[in-house]
Length: 144
Image (cartoon, rainbow, N blue to C red; front, side, top):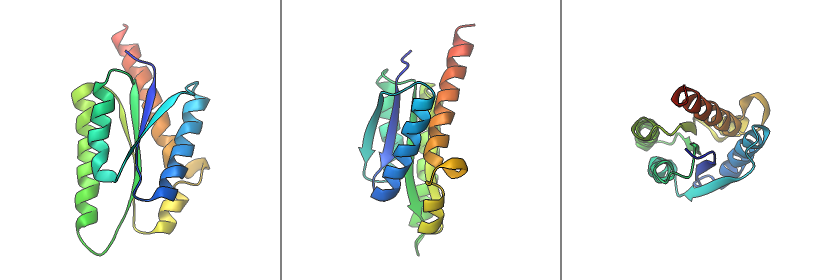
C-alpha cells in the first residue's frame, strides 16, 4: 500500500481550484505529506475518472477530489453534482482507496469563496484531512 497522496482538481473555476489546492496542500503538509501529486481535469464531472485512474495506479493511499460547481439557471448543476458525488463514492468503494469529496456545490460565487478561504471553512483542507484519516484507518484495520 502506498503512502503517497493525490489531488484531482476540476479547473473550471481556476481561482477556486487554486485556493482549494492551497488548503489541501497545507493539510497534507501538516500531516507529514509534502509530496502530493496534482492532476487537473476540466470540470467536476471528470473528477471520478481521475480519482479512478489515481486509485488504481497503486501509487496513492488516497485522493482528494476538489473543485466547484455553482448553480446556474438550468438543471445542469444537479446532474453534475449528483454524478460527481456518486462517481467519487463508487471509486472509493470499488478500489478501497479513500477519495474525499472536496467539491463545493454552491448557489453563488460568494459562498464558494467563503468555503475556500482557510480556517474553519476550507473545503480543500477538510478533504485532505479526511483522506489522510481514512488512509490511516485502512492501514490500521488491514494490519490487525
